[in-house]
Image (cartoon, rainbow, N blue to C red; front, top):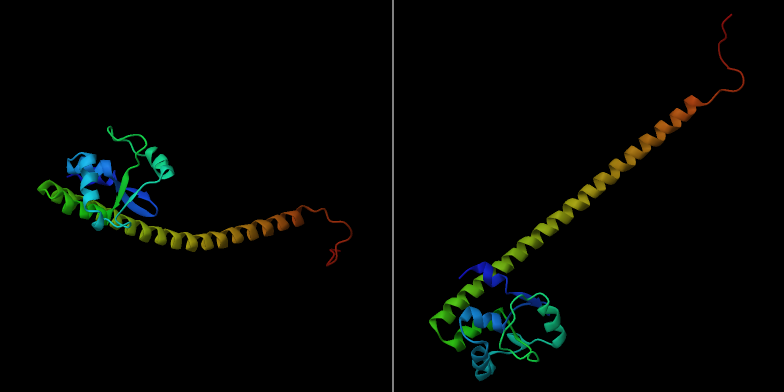
Length: 173
């Protein structure tokens, strides 16, 4: 199964990466109704940190991003969101070879996203360090240029002034 296809169906809600029931049903090749019935029959292995129902505002916000809409879901029914752990538990309740293989692929997609996020975090920290370092260097250079410009301007103004009065010093005779 293509990791990119799975990763494109992972969203972030409530600070957690989740997958929606209808996307999972499609990946597991079952109807959304069948998936949700299996979950309902095994509710004890799907605590709130494994699965939760989206709120209307969450679904409204997310449905603007989600490209595939479930065709048979009533418009008033809100989808279930499964965390990485909830997705893993689905293989246990669907009990098919396809479910086990799909579950492995989905877990790999979650792992790849975590690794990417860690690499991004490290890269971001390094960029901030470089930015801080070079901001200070550029500030020093900017101050030096300003100093030289002011010094040059003062010398130019001094030379361009017309002298008034007598010159003091040696006079030729």
